[in-house]
Length: 121
Image (cartoon, rainbow, N blue to C red; front, side, top):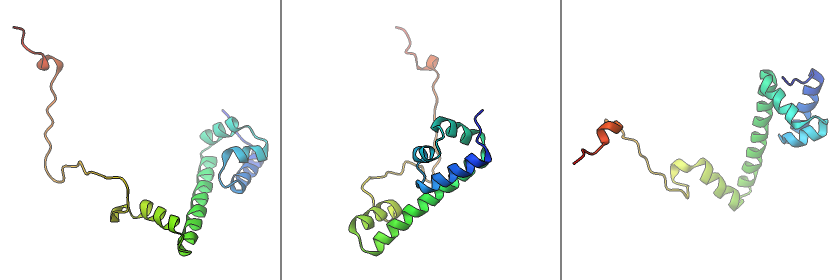
């Protein structure tokens, strides 16, 4: 089982923040092996949660940058935001079809292979 010392965890998490969540870059900065860090993250629930927190921070950073572009009326940013955040208002290029039954009951008949055989003539 791979583990990191408290000092390695602290250095790694700092490097992960500095690299905006890029695991490979954080490993390079700390001179830790990527496979060793991945195994340590899988084995250490606390470290896993801290890495997830860094990923949330990166997501917030990206979202903040997008919102600043939208405020500047950047057309591409506005279109991207509409397609990703306003799908329920029809801003999508994909056609989505609802295959649910709403409140109608659905009957499913399962036929065994024996029942599906044709009678021999």
